[in-house]
Length: 177
Image 1 (cartoon, rainbow, N blue to C red):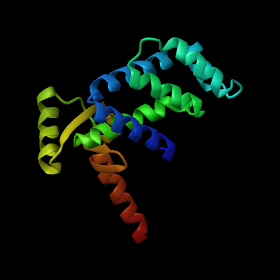
Image 2: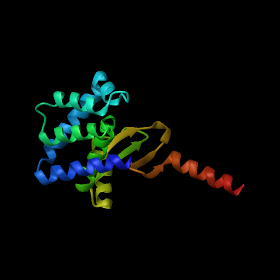
Image 3: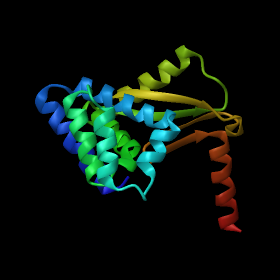
Image 4: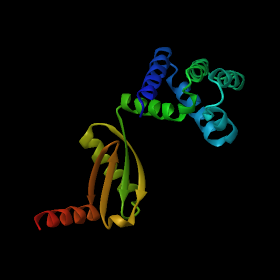
């Protein structure tokens, strides 16, 4: 994450919060980023370094006609400052800041076998109890883990898998040799 991404995301979060428009801004920004991902032409326009910032801004102004005013102004400013090619990263940081403010812990739960919804809910509940935060978990299956689970939350990783324990034992054995 670049510092600029955070600065833009924080500014938008503050402005949306002050106006009581956070939900609307969040939705429209996500819709715009989804449109960028889906449209090769739009993505090419925004990411082409040979196209000057004011040309990108003018194209966006025409395309964003009836968009939410705060989102429209934000996107035009980002384009004017030459950062519109980074809008996906800015939006991801915006989402991260919203989650942080709401005390939501986003994590990836990786298991060796598919968990039932009830089993996954139990794991998530235990993490919520331990962290004191609401947890939003994405689930993934990796048979190479053999058993157990791995929890990844940002840069924090908890490896309680059989594969992780075997790797740890191997390292200990080779260190003593």
